[in-house]
Image 1 (cartoon, rainbow, N blue to C red):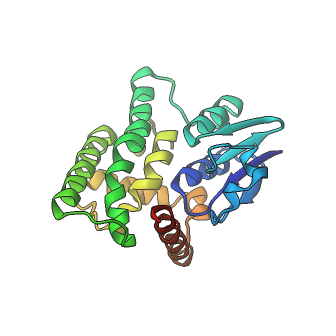
Image 2 (cartoon, rainbow, N blue to C red; image 1 turned 60 degrees about the horizontal axis):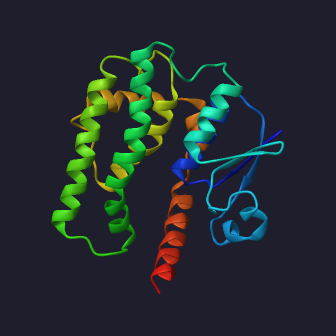
Length: 220
């Protein structure tokens, strides 16, 4: 059976968790608190980069969430979470990579502000908001009238982007100007896999507290 090393709040973890549930794959869950467990020798032997998620399939270890998603799609092709038509596949891949390379870095200053870590000028925060707005406009245009990105059914692009976009209102980023994305977020929230992996407010609060302490210790 697959072993899935994870953390309840991490969106990197959640995208893998949702994929496992969408594909109805059996797995053993091994949850980390990220309070130092990830630095222990036993885990470093599995992932020397000391972060989650990690998927272990017998003796084969897969690190990095996007690599894990591709592994699961290749090994468990049904139900398919990647479209086959070239343009639709390109849309899904663009959404995945733009989320990781553009949206997440754009969000980080806002997250740090919420956590009270670091000093960010209003100009820097506005730059972050503009970067996020560019991503959201791109997503809105490429979603169009489709229920999901590149398909009539949920895809890896939806899972990767959705785990981040649905968190934006908590950072003061409204989706009111993006009606297609609003409907898309609602559809995702109605899915069983989404509901099962939704972190509680208490869990989020505890996670932010742990991360705040960890980041302060790293600066000392």
